[in-house]
Length: 262
Length: 376
Image (tube, rainbow over all chains, first blue to last red; front, side, top):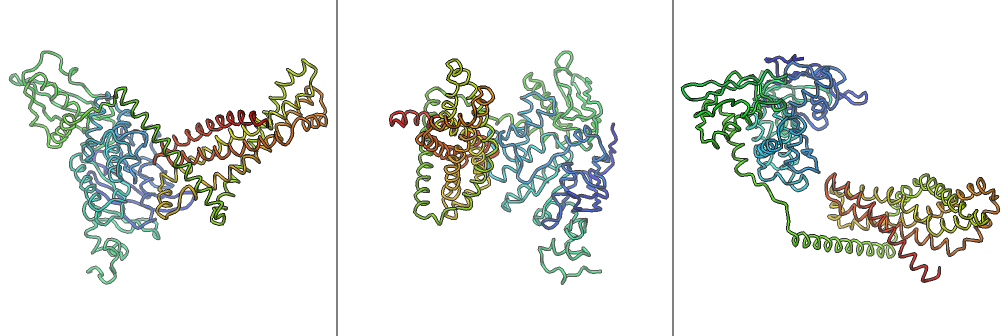
């Protein structure tokens, strides 16, 4: 039953091929995410970032390759085991994806209600604490329609954290947010990682966030249908051999002029 | 915090006594999804005079451990027992502090209201809704005037699309239900008429009921469920997606752009569908009469023609057109006033159908009185 390896990386993707209806969008995608790392999946619009994320969290099944969490293969696991594994994974969707008929407290409490033996008072206490952790204390009774986009994302994060996940996936956390709110969300990600030791995988093309908090990135490319760079973005921006990577990370400036020193 | 997605090792709390101080050693794996030991269960014996929590060999831990430590601490506070947490790591201390702050500052809101407040809010709500509905009705009248004044500006293409949706596409269901209604009415009246040897009057009963009442009514009920709900869901979703706001900022009246084509479509298609329903209802009666009463179709048709005149048909059609507009109004109004959420759209759809049906019945009752007074 217990096949997880204590020294294995948090996520190990090998030879992943993703696609819909016979169209291959990504092929031969391989990378590893270390424990406690803030890892970014970056790339231009339409390069398959969100598709990759959907395949990582099991919303779509890859056509080839494997995704391992802590050394245990997710794709080949039984349905029951996959559900067990998903309990330890949190996902923050682009718009927060809160359930509109429940208030914020109920939204965060629902996973606790489904999966934990806690009583109602403990669930409420924990849910309130999660909301406080994301800076939403006092908003427990609000409904998703009554709060701003940034708050919805933070509430979505509180819900993603409800079951104390070991890995949290973020789908475009800064999309549609002002720079300040976006920076606060970045700080929140770092703080939570430092406090709770989670592994964070962020899908984004926000350069400010990438340079501020990413430990490592992989860059996807639409033409190549796969990874074209992997490493520290601060190093890649100047030292990558691929002009597309330097151009992307260097805010589209003409990177051709700045060939990396041999 | 936790670092594996494994099945947890045994969760354990070991108690030791060290010179009058109870040492609570936390061990194993603590997962929130598993059952954890509770403090009253662990403390099996006399109350200690001093407690110290010790970080033992912990595989991994999460909020389950936090809740346990919090429980111990709260117990110590109520029993006035000194509790030493200094041996716990920083992360645990921070989380404990956060949980404490939450509990101190959390206000349990009281939603109970006294009777007067309740009545006051209800009155305010009714007044608000009445005003809102009147405004919508007013906007529709303005939209109607604009349509007459500038027909070339009307969204004819949308209107035709809607006619296709609410008219042509509804033919099978309206046809089937009307045919069956005709069959049912013929059966019911045949039982009665046969006792008096007045078999042929089944044709009169079915014809009159269909043309004056049931044709329009059944069509309206079907369209309230089919089209009224669709209008509310479409407009509600458009509102949630800020499409209505986009129209308004362009200076386009949503009522003229979205509501009028739908109202016209329903107002035109409903009488046509009612006529079609009348025909099939009469046909249903004809089949029953032939099979059950041996009345030849020609005789049935001739009898129907003598029973029904143009005034009967026109009253049915006036009703149908009115019902069509009412169903459209209910659907569009609820859709435009929907809350911007999935639940809001669901509520709008439900209330559009309920409101549509209510309006149909109320209007039918008023028509019954009015036609009686007028002698139509």
